[in-house]
Image 1 (cartoon, rainbow, N blue to C red):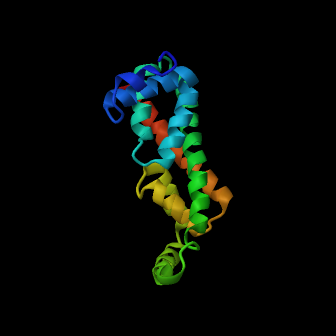
Image 2: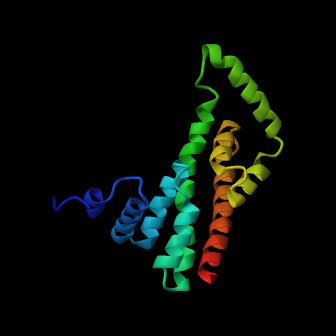
Image 3: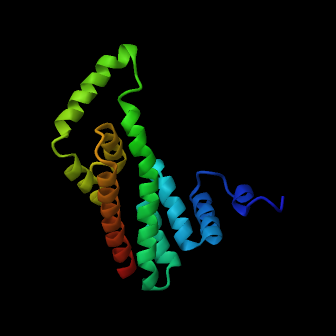
Length: 174
């Protein structure tokens, strides 16, 4: 029993205490930068995990010097983009998978995406910086529209850096 983490035995999964203890263990094991990177990857893939809430809590509870903030922002933005790269490539094949009876539905979606093609970079930039529309969806659409990977990466990273920098600065200032 000594090899199991304390949160495994003490608290039921799904409870706020479980999440707090898992986060504590993750931060203890990887440090604030590595933990931020890992949580951001998970949050980038699982929409129910919120990077923003994690960052606010991290800054308020675990950061003791403002000099730590830029590295936290970079770790969070990089972690998010690592996750989004996988979603981008998933989106590239998204419209090619269904066959047979779903073909008409796919063609309808393709037509809607074609109308969006006039402004994909602007919409993706707004999404990556503000979260509206949800970045998860715009990343899939970016892959489906086959926007250039390098542009996807630069726009997404810049938007996430801006979003997280503002959030972390606000959390620090409070």
